[in-house]
Length: 309
Image 1 (spheres, rainbow, N blue to C red):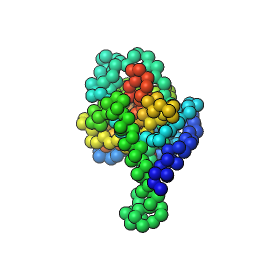
Image 2 (cartoon, rainbow, N blue to C red):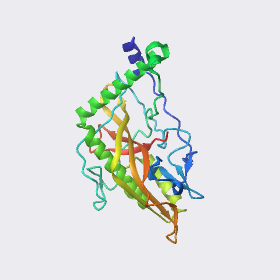
Image 3 (tube, rainbow, N blue to C red):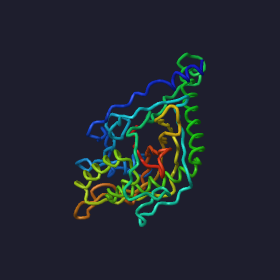
Image 4 (cartoon, rainbow, N blue to C red):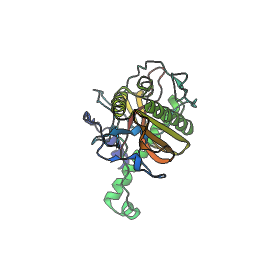
């Protein structure tokens, strides 16, 4: 029964999420000026200025998917519609002075790398289920079956990554952390052109709009990452195949959770502090989705979305 259910699930048609609204501000807002040390909040790169000195979650809206448009892409799934965590070669820390390095990869000044344009099955926190319910109730058996299928998809994608690009969990997480750090630095500086190398087109467009909104309220910001990261965890992965007969023609999306300590402070045109306090360390939790093509020459990992839970 598990095998038959697995086959039915993996051949289930994919329903693409609708395009998100143009207003990407999240409904929940926080003020960094009131945040105390050791309080968990969203990271600076996931925040945008909202009049009145309030920080609001970015790339939000009602949907959990925070990339822009959905391309008319036929997504076919063969006997495994996967999920994983991981990636390629050992990273070299990116250098701003070089201007074209992200996560250890040399990137052309103008990246031209296609993207599906959406997050396939975005991550959501699993609903807790008691052990007795899992063992002795039909709903618990169904949940156990679903969890087994997810683990299978995860293992399949890891296997594909190892075979195709050489997967190493530790190396990928180090590389992803370098990208995370670099993107946050560029957002703080307002360096829109350089961000294009690390973000997909839709993500870049969203970030560009948010930076401009922030700059209309704040003259400048100070952002600092306290290293090392408290924790980095791979939450989920998916593989989007373009040809059901050739699983090598695919995109991989890996969802990572970063828990870090950060310092933030915003200034007006008179260099007066209007939000935050750079003397305080704030515990921050961010969930980012990284994407890579398995079939384009010179492909590299880029950020395609942030997830707001």
